[in-house]
Image (cartoon, rainbow, N blue to C red):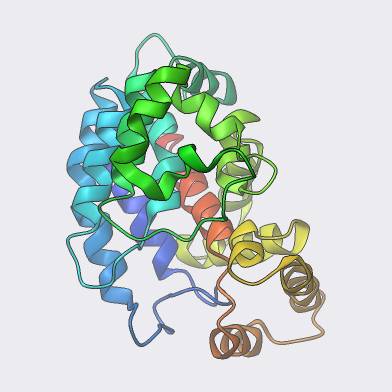
Length: 279
């Protein structure tokens, strides 16, 4: 039987193996500087931090360890958002007093501390992460400042949940953290109810999620109009108006990378595996 940390690692591997996953690296498509092998190495490198979270170590320390381990490959940021989504779920699954449920994961989020927030900021020093500029007046809390922002966090007494809450309007991962992981558990349901190889079910769930809601990473990297168009094209693929394989090639060529949606699928796969999904 796999451990909780092993299921989290496997979920990362299954997510990147799913294809077609329009715009993202998968087993058939990659970018010149970000390849399939980098994601495999990133998943393996994150394992120690996942084990820490499952064992009940502080969430911030565990997250920092996952990101430092993930970054030990040449591609850079492969699974920052996916790991950020997975960690509260892994912690809930590993805690005999909690359950792997929206309520259990929310309890983990609500229990985060200022120290957890500080380690989250430190994780940005290990790898480059695409984020929006902070709102006016929030520059001292720009996550790209890394450990330099820690004194400001401490002076304001901000927990990691508080930090996430400040980004829900522009970051889909933060929104999942604060609003109970609704889309993560929906992705788990979709994978469990699907047919065929698990990686292919994950690819289908990715397309459904992308069609349903704009990807905030696309909005950050490009703009809101591009993100909305991306979702419209995903809906066209679901409706049979365009071949998903063709759409995948087009997105790669255009540099459209719906990374937040992929993060949600990776977390959903973990939930499904923990609930007994056969692979």
